Length: 161
Image 1: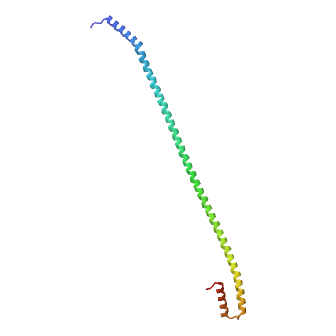
Image 2: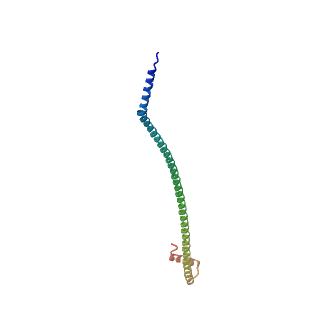
């Protein structure tokens, strides 16, 4: 094997010229395209991370809002339950008061009617006893006759049949 320096120099010069041409016309645009692509990918990754963070934050906000809505719904249900219980107790108390009032009123009415009946009966008994006494005085006092007079009078009044 024989080594020639001139071939080596020509190859090195050709390599340097090729490298200079590639660097001038190919590497610059190629590297700039690659750099733009790298920046685009980096920007898209940053946007994806930001979107993921926003989505996570939105999910947390929605969970908090849902939890608050559930709590509010429970509060409304409990308040409605308490209101209905209160109204039911009120209605029951009103009904008890009304029934007690009606009972007392009925008792007063019964007592009033009883007093009227007793008064009417007393006046009637007084009148009857006066009539009996006057009839007895007109007739002889015979026990049989007296019993017959009482029976006749009671028939006139309508007590006995």
